[in-house]
Length: 216
Image 1 (cartoon, rainbow, N blue to C red):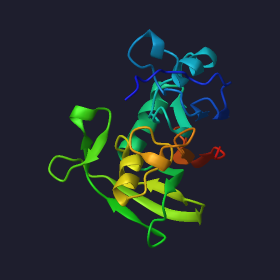
Image 2 (image 1 turned 180 degrees about the vertical axis):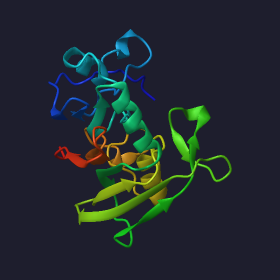
Image 3 (image 1 turned 120 degrees about the horizontal axis):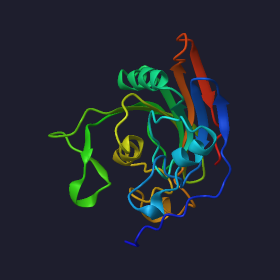
Image 4 (image 1 turned 90 degrees about the vertical axis):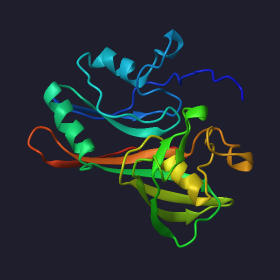
């Protein structure tokens, strides 16, 4: 395997919504959510946001290769409020993915426990002995030449959950550098995008949904 070289995209911030408590941003594929280990991985979405919003606080993350909606807090109160919503699964996340092949049935739920694949970190794997519970609802949006476009709705939020669950279905996400092989790997990026995030605003609790257009 070739040594990974971090080359983050040189794109301007795409702010989707901002107010006194929250900042929603559209993360590009190829950019870390938070700094990695080493000076060469210091550039990330959070450090870029800190230039405009020095008070910004982390709430959740997206994988390096995944694009789409992320929310950051602008106060400790907002961070706690949002953190509890994620912890109690009160947020609703919707992803769009292009996968290899056509899943049978049109929709369903993957319910397979996940754990880290220690010899092959950062890969995750299904493990019925030591894995943590993980569920993903999926639905075919449309068929494509060599596969399908799916709407994915994670019930839990495990690391690499959508990627490993689709692989377990036999339909890896196109362009996945960790889990796809052959023709499924031959794409310019991971075809996974966080399209929408629904949550309650920390100031008053009103429900809000923020979306980011699918770039593929």
